[in-house]
Image 1: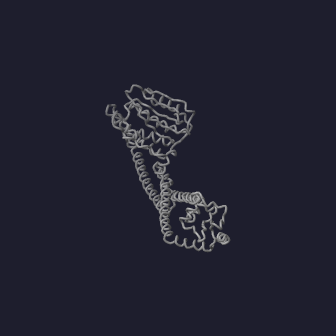
Image 2: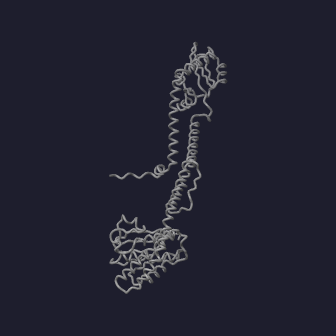
Image 3: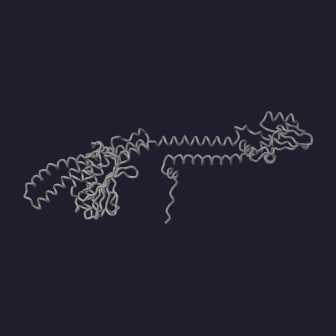
Length: 445
């Protein structure tokens, strides 16, 4: 099947923008209304001219010809031209006179159309005069042609048309400004919803309107307040349970330590250690939920921090260091970065066991200027459809990365919280083989 051609940028923007579509609808409605009105008026005037106006005009022209007399008198013709917006030309065997000698009676068709559009009559050329009953023949053989004088330049149809277009454009601009002002709260509501999605509930959506958009903002604020309350209640319950578990876990570990060394004792100590780590990670995750406020930043040499962590806590483990110079220290919380890196290394060692190459701890500055600190293993990796869920609390993908290999699914979630608290992101990529997980900071850092 042939792929659909991408939309032009202006078309995509028009389809997305409610303001643009409303203004376009306004313009189309105005044009359609104008077209219908002009068509209707044209039909009315056309019928009215033939049935009413043309007989009256013919009678009026007869009276004008009678006023000029037979034979025609130029003085009377000149008096009529001075009193009325008409021009008179007399042709015949005795009298040849023109009230406007400079007038071009044989006009271009464009001039004829201009005069017809302005006056609702034919132009003053000879053919138009005959058709519209503006020519009279006297008994003595003279031909009297009546014509309308040309309007001033300011009233010519072309200028009127441009003026009409300018007014239409001005009205369209005013309509767009009015629609933009009317729908301005949508931008505020969108920014507020985006902030709520990031978990920032401190500032409500400030839309002080008594219309439907104001009511929508109030309902969204109410929903956000309810969600914030439920999240805070969940966080408080989780913190309370975690704190309460610490004491019995500590007592249980002390009691197990007093037992005679045996396989069941070592298994109990291992399980109690996992429970302790779980409680510590839960407490740390809830602290980091406060974002940057939970950090204690200071100038930190990331390469030295990674080297020190691998040399002390992972001494004897098969790890490769690929640490580049990133241009000096960055402001970060070294304790939380050690926690992030320790979790990533634990995951890599656990899931990369038996790989052809040991996991690599890397630090480099990328092409777009971002700083990346992370770990890459050569293990079995994860399925592509699982990448989006890695980093969720208690999520363990199927396959090699299961409970049998250890972990409860909090290590990557905690690493993501640390990266986000520092203003960065946790990036997870399949390497085939293996997985690469890194904290990435923007160039400003």
